[in-house]
Structures are given as C-alpha cells and as structure tokens.
Length: 409
Image (cartoon, rainbow, N blue to C red; front, top):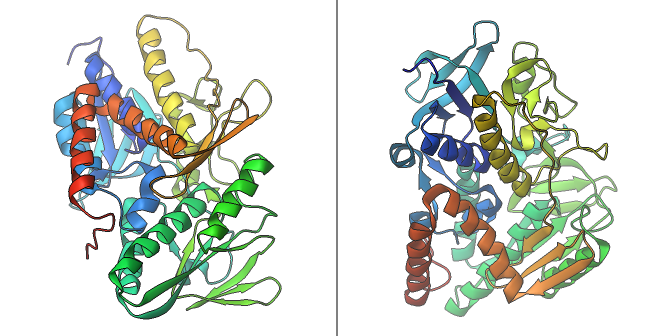
C-alpha cells in the first residue's frame, strides 16, 4: 500500500455508511473497509414495507459483497466488539465467529439507532421491533398467517412517529387489497401514541391530515396514551386499559446500542449517542468520526442534528468531501444540516409532506412520487442513474404483471 494511502474503516452499512464507502471506494485514494453484520442492505425508511410484505427484495435490496466488488472497497461481515484508540485498532467478530483485529487510520461509526422501550416492563419480551431488516422480516412472519386465517385479528403499534404511521397505513392497504380474495380475515389495527397527536415532531396541520387519513382507513388511533406494561397478547396503559393484540410492535422513541458507551472512553449522552464536534470528529479522538443517528452533532443554532434519514445522507456526503480536503492538507469544515422537510408515506399511492420550513403541507399521489424519488436518489449514489433507470423500468413491469399483495410465505 502506498505511503500516502490511509485506511478508513466504516462501521455500519446503513444509508450513511454505505453511501460513504461508495464515495470513498470510487475515489481510490484510500483503502476502505466496511464492517457490517448483515449480508444485504435495506433502506431503513422502507422497513415498514418489509413488515407488511410489500417490499420488493429482488430489486431493492443490495448485496454488500457484490456492491463492494463493484465499488472498490472491502466488505467484512461481522460486528465490532471493541476499539483500542492508542493502537488505532478495532476488534471484529466475523460471521464465522472468528475474532480479527483491523488497523485503521480513520474510523467512522455509522451504526444508527434503535427503538427505545424506556425500560417499560414486558416490552423487550412481548413486543416486536422494527430496527433492522431481520426484525422487519420477523414481524411479517407473524402478520402473514393472520392475513390468511379467517376471523378478526388485532395488531397494535406503539409509537406514532414516521415508522409507526407508515406501518399502520401499509398494513391497512394490504388488508384492504387482500379482502378482494374473500379469505374471511379482518385486521383491527391500533396506533398508540403517548403525545397528544400523531407525528408529534411535525407541524400540527400535518398531524391532523395524517390522523384523519388513518382513521378513514379504519385504523384506531389512540393519543395521550402511555403504555405502562406489555404482556403476552396485551398492552396495559397507564390508565389501566387493556389493549389485546395478536401482534404488538414497539416503534416509540430512539436510543443507540449500549456497546457505544464502552468504546475506550468516548463520550456519550443519555441515549448513548456518541458526542462529536461540528466536524463530526468524536470529542476525544480526532481520528474517530460519527455520522447518522448515532452522533450527537451540535448545530449553529444551539440544537443538534435530528435523527433523520436525510441528515444521515447529508453527513455521508459531507464527510466524503472533508476527507478530500484533509488529503490536501486543508482544515475540516463543520457539518450543517439542511432540513429538506418531512415526508410520510400512507400506503403505496399516497403521502403527506411538510416543506419550506414546515410552512407548506402537501399530500397526494404526487407527494408519494416525491417520497419514492428520495429512495431513488439514495440508489443513484450506490449505482448511478443508468442502473436506477433500469430498476425503475423493471419494477414498473412487475407491478403491471403481479397483484399488489404478493402473499409470500
């Protein structure tokens, strides 16, 4: 390896991590390694489609191995188990169970966040989560038999943020489409939120429009409802109400993995995010960077970068540019998040969004197309427009040839 080359290791193959290694690998100036335990990449904002059985894995999932070969980086399937900052080494447990040690010049942590159960009794044991493709597949495996079985079945989703709202809307559409097959199955879907409205981080008028649409789809929406305990087949509210469920999904709040608090003394906050400088460097080590939901990154207005997919994408683009500056001996520039608004899908043919600093709320089929465009922009970074165009054509053909509900087991 040339003396000028540096070795950059990226931990986590989510949207931010994969876009970063794609850009760095194509740049060909550094040795780039991606450490990721999964074999395929799924865009996290679409995990609700996997859970509802409507995601096209054949066209929209990305093989890390194939992608690495095409984009000149090395893919190491495994989990990071520790770091030695003084020696600039990290330990990885591979998919085969071996422990390997990797040296780095720059380490980038991009492992995202997971749902926060707030230590509510019973949630970890009796609720399902939607933080990874594997968990989303598990949810689908539980829901799929209910769609086939006769009778009334109950599904409860806790948390009316974007994930919870998109999941209940997708399930309602699937149930509605499936009813044409006269299976005799009927889903009762309940969305539960502790705040006084759905999408509590969005404009009030957007929340009102979304809740109205959900209720028109037959979804029961409970706001100002805090879950005190989860049991097998039931959720208990703080007021003592029992909400019986065949499937219970927890999609409330966020926190980062516990192991982030054990990285050789790096600073973390109360939800285990790693504290970083505006340059995305960790506060205690200039050679360790953090992007995406796992970073607490300060902003000029005194706040912090929000945990959103668009923020992760912007951070990956920014950091790739900063590594180029660093190679030229220039100082790193601070990362400033540019809020492009919020879009929430309500089924495959409808979406609601807030743009222009939340001053304008849009809804309809065209907004859904804009939602899909964001995903295509992510794919464009990974593949280029040529392949994305072919994927879009293939997907359109499949939609014309196949029913909406594919009924896969």
